[in-house]
Image (cartoon, rainbow, N blue to C red):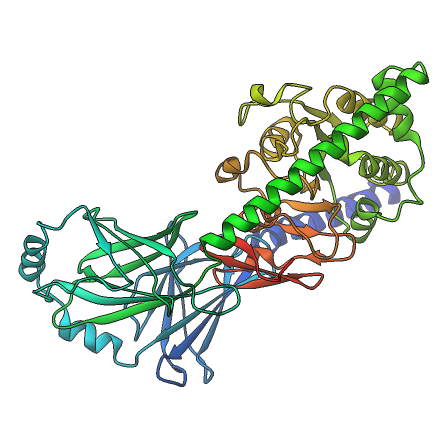
Length: 510
């Protein structure tokens, strides 16, 4: 005979089991889903919009095809699984296009399509047969490897059948014609180049062979834009409008940045020498001096970026990757002060600190193998300060640029499972190994230290964009970067940055 206590225990067991089942079912069916939006706008190039047009998104690597019609405003909105890449199919549009749903739940990606109403009919009407395409290829065999264009206008071919008349119009950041800018177009199929400089109107007229995809390059920005020139019958006229800073402005900015970095490196060296003199006078080792500095209070500092960002954003189970080179001392103090107040509330914190190579000379620093990267699981304030002091004493950065990407890549490998990846960086230090970004895709929350008046190093905007992450200054959280597309802009404390040719460019004058 069961006792009353045994019956209650059995009931409790059944309740717990039922709740666990509901939790498991909900997680499997609903809770594990990450959904973001893809928004497409269909516009008539001659005015108006295309409503009631069937639009399909077909996943490139398995999954469900999404399908619906555009509304009265020519807009179609899809809820899509995060990170899925689709090919776009529009009923009255013929070009090949792809789009990816953002990695972060609740984010969105937007794309605008402007084209003629009779695009499909014209393509069918003027499409070439395979035999006609072969004839075009035969006519183009004698093309030189590089065709030079003088005064912005290419010499017109005698036989125009295999060519498209293509006009490229380029404006600078002030929306004025970009004159005398060198442009190179390279065909992916035939590997034939067309090179010339824009005229006073910022234009370059070129006769492009049909049946190829062309990649547009500027002297200091390769792969700026791709353009298909399809096989088609008859006389074809087309073009593209671009916005680009121009080579002259690029070189001006490059020189200004080199001068800024040179001044920053001198400042850091002077601070290092002064600190070493202080340690000697106090009869302290470098590591003991660092430990004493880290224990100093930092609440009175005017720049409280680290404290404010970490308090404002409730990221859980964080892996914090932090630059500990010479310029980061005030922010290391802030991190230690924040940790002292929060480490009991966040038992699963993990840290990765990096110092750009453990005092290696600059010529010894190999991209991806620079080193000076240290990992620690949360153990308490004294343990954290001891590690930070050790990392700081073993390296002060040397040159201004730091090995951020190496620290991210190796840090993730060293760490235990985490939920949020946070990188605390020096906004005055470029990322020396930005080329490694192509090997990293985990979303990163970037905390910018030393950012003033909307100044953001472009390297950090690029990392946040490519990894579908976020940017955080002392006053602002930029959480929409993940959903940005080519040509879109973002404003940071009054300063505008725009994606141009797959990279961020500062639009607002410094």
